[in-house]
Length: 99
Image (cartoon, rainbow, N blue to C red):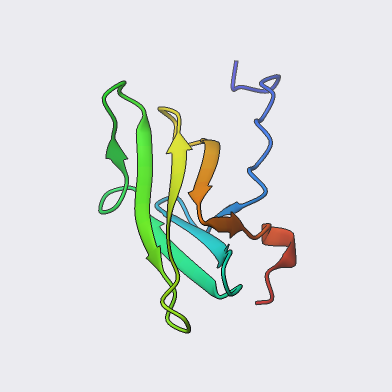
């Protein structure tokens, strides 16, 4: 009753949820270490893959050196982050962000 005893899933260390609809992630490109930030929303940017899971996939191009890569953030049906994957990029933990 009232979900008093439900365990809350631990937050993903690489994805920050700004509000109920908006997420943010930062990556560092491997060739030159350029930092690129992405802000994305449930309604406009997150799609559904072939298995019915929610997914955000985005190509990465850094402005400093034009390094290329790709990032993927996977969600369950409740928009809880279940995984992050990167090609030619490394995810920066939220704890290291300077805001």
